[in-house]
Length: 100
Image (cartoon, rainbow, N blue to C red; front, side, top):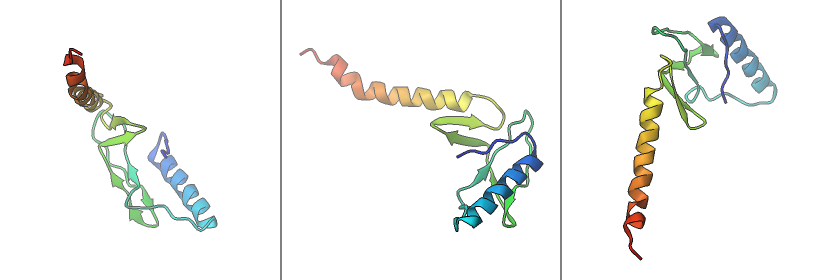
């Protein structure tokens, strides 16, 4: 899942509400698997925490099979898709060469 906010304060509020809802149903957020990413032209550091544990901030994040980069560029996504296409072409090339 993804939580999207326009400010760091708003994101922390959303995380706090999620934490309260989880506590109410005896669930917990896996802090080791929860990451934060900001989209900005220049590198930006955020301090989002759960139960006083600072969440890891990442520069790239894969969501629903697409790669999102903090700098807003799509070069990593394009490279990823080209690599996948090359893998598929490599797998079907013998079939395409078959003369039967």
